[in-house]
Amino acid sequence: MTPPRVSLVVTTYNRKDALGLVLRSALRQSEPPLEVLVADDGSRDDTRALVEAVAREAPLPVVHCWQEDDGFRAAAIRNEAIARARGDYLVMVDGDIVLHRDFVRDHARAARPGRLVQGSRALLSQAVTEAALAQGTVDFGPLSPGVSNRLNTLRSPILSRLFSYDSANIYRVRSANLGCWRADVVRVNGFDEAFVGWGREDSEFVARMQHAGVVKRHLKFAALGYHLHHPEASRRMLDANQRLLDETLRTRATRCERGLDARLGQS
Image 1: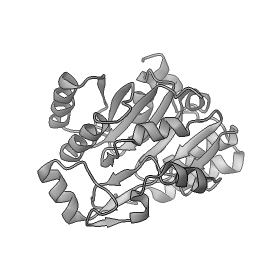
Image 2: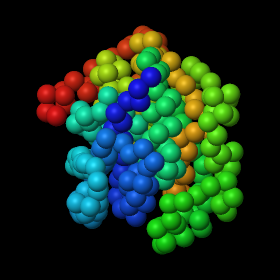
Image 3: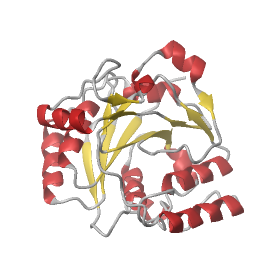
């Protein structure tokens, strides 16, 4: 199968230092993406300045998609970036996930019709994160200090073929490392913009994809990401978001009402 054209979507909010490392890792890929779209959920002007500076020097398009700061609206800004994406395959990461050099290559190789791919991440300690931000470090590996989930630092195409697996578990979903076909995303109307605040918007998106016949593949020993430390997000909206997810599961919905459709005409 010919590898797809990959649009890399990076979600961020007011964390310019971490985003700088992520963009640096994205631009040194062994097989670069077609483009990088920064989905910015209302960051200050210093983030815009960073993205514009990176874009001027980058060998590929780096696009800044921004919306006003009106609380946690990751679903909405992801939809805006997806609407503007030119690739036929989307790889979504958070703006605190530093990418292994073969990250995009691994995702592209794992892409199959009717499949979305959930990647893994290794967690970096606060001390290692602070050092990486101060020094501009983007190279991590199995022997790096301060790494949790160390098994997720091992890259092996052979082990990946042996240990990757399909799963219908919607609670093991993180758009911090997620790949899917743009056509499938359009078919389910993207992320549900009724979700505000942290929690369950990723699970609800994947639930609709599964209802539409898309199989979730957990990719092991490939597409490695290193998660920079940060305080946990507020769980204040989790109960309300859980109710939205429960309704999608009850009705086996394949589309949401407030989604990507409204943005496609603006792209």
